[in-house]
Image 1 (cartoon, helix red, strand yellow):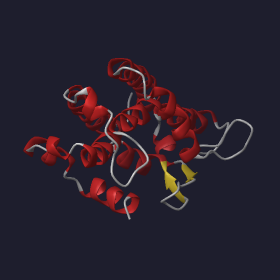
Image 2 (tube, rainbow, N blue to C red):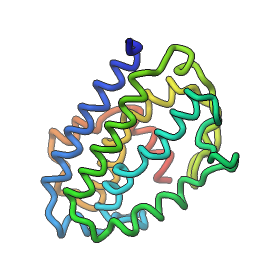
Image 3 (cartoon, rainbow, N blue to C red):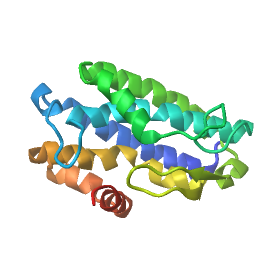
Image 4 (cartoon, helix red, strand yellow):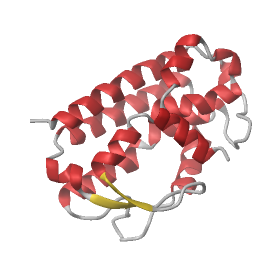
Length: 191
């Protein structure tokens, strides 16, 4: 049986993904190709990031369940650099059509959902070392706490995308991304 906390997180995660896909499909090719101010990415790069990041997150979740590793460690025991990995993923997807990227995102999300549905209370309490990135320091966090923030990943990056397409910030979008966790993320990442 899926842990009640995970059920709530999955509901939020699914709701955000549905809104995210709708938002992405509303963008023109010209809008998708716009550079995002204060970033090296284009609008479409954030979509590619969200289509691919579930892979390493899935590996981390499986590491927790199997006891074969901690956090985002590689199978060889080395740490993982999210910034380098992201760049390697988004560059080849800049010429990919939007629907292909969204299909990739759906498939990776389905795989990660299956693992999340099987998390035990012990899995949620598991502490791992989040390695940080170019703007956030490393820290120790439980899987449960990680999930509560990570489930907001889609709207976090819609805020980034809006810097490139500010005219797309409708009242509905603004309400969707108005969340203290998202605001905190944006503050940390956009200093």
